[in-house]
Image (cartoon, rainbow over all chains, first blue to last red; front, side, top):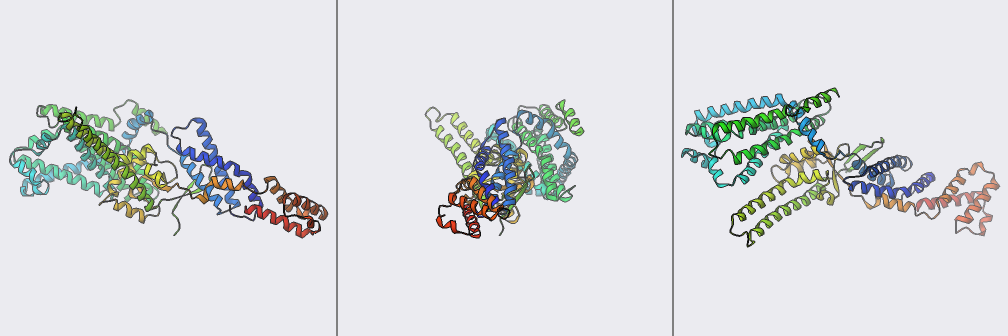
Length: 334
Length: 244
């Protein structure tokens, strides 16, 4: 211990030192407790208050001393242990799906609509481009794909015939999640990253539809994408909208600094990522098991695609559960 | 260079600083976690390959399915280990714990599910173009040594390892190992505080009594010591005690 000219400080330290070993042990134990009992939680809180009080006193008695540093470290550890969010219980999950996700979707709805328009616009541009300049298809499709289509085979069915549906679904989900997460993350580049991802995907979609249409396979590709496409593309727009919201916060922060605005916006739109992942899991399963199945008719595929899309819209608009209205109204009242 | 630190305010209003982990500690923690997930993924593959060699499985369609299952589990382990471990351990993965660090919010609190999820989602950018170059550069350039994911999620990595010299446990033990009982120290301190207000004979008598009981070096010569010498001896006794 550092020497100090104030004997009062030394006496105070000697008087309270006996408590610190117990408090240090409590701090170490509190950090390890996953599910503390009420008694343990109260004990931790008491230790936290005592340590903070002692820290303030020691700082006054021995400013800059090693004891103050030790108390600060221990108190800091307890601060983290005491201030922790509650565990994700079933009720919290329920609230997330019932209230938080629709609320997050509502905040990005206008952006999502704009991005959907961008997707459609770029798809139309892609269609026009490949229709007008067919040789440009090499920019958006691999030589194998082009060769297959020119010989009357869709690449989708070629791949699907090799891999088992379960593995294929996994691969599709992984790929879709990667694209969606990319659209979200790159949105932070002032929204430009998300715009780019949506535009390039729209361009490729339109271009490939035009290319397959030229070779009489347009209906086949449409048939293949009918069941999973609507949700997959909507989710991509939604994730890109969430990413654009981050970029928007960076461009024009409503209040506070830009970093604070981005953090606030990320916390707001964060629940959407869970919704996107779950929706993509569903569309991946459809793409792996239903879309390649030749026995499923176009009306059935249309029904599946529209049904899944309607379900998604009902969920995201908060109409899936009757309790949403009440919760939203309650939140508004709060 | 001054150590980067996060200043937070406790519930009681007392401010505290948490030392921030630098790029070195972050990389060390990441490498440990990376090894764990790599071993986990390889473990699944090994199990799948060994299971295929079982006489009851070899040559049957089940062998192929086992291999696919092993590959899927290996990929899931590899790609989902980091977010899952961070969420389950609330920002203190085995790698972080071994390195002596943990993830906290900018308020020094335990991060929630959302913050940890967003922090992990942004690994996509931080890992670009390869080997976390973007994240590493960001850690080196930012004041709080954070990567992009931390910036967006509002998290920071702080050090939890305690230098032995600032261990509260050790300091408390040292403080209790004084040569004199606490009451005696208080008595000496009290006597010196009231020195000027006491009668000269009375304070000299008190000082001699205290010194004869507390100071082993005190001898018969003390009786001849003057007031100033007695006061100095008491002060030395107190100083010695404080130094211990």
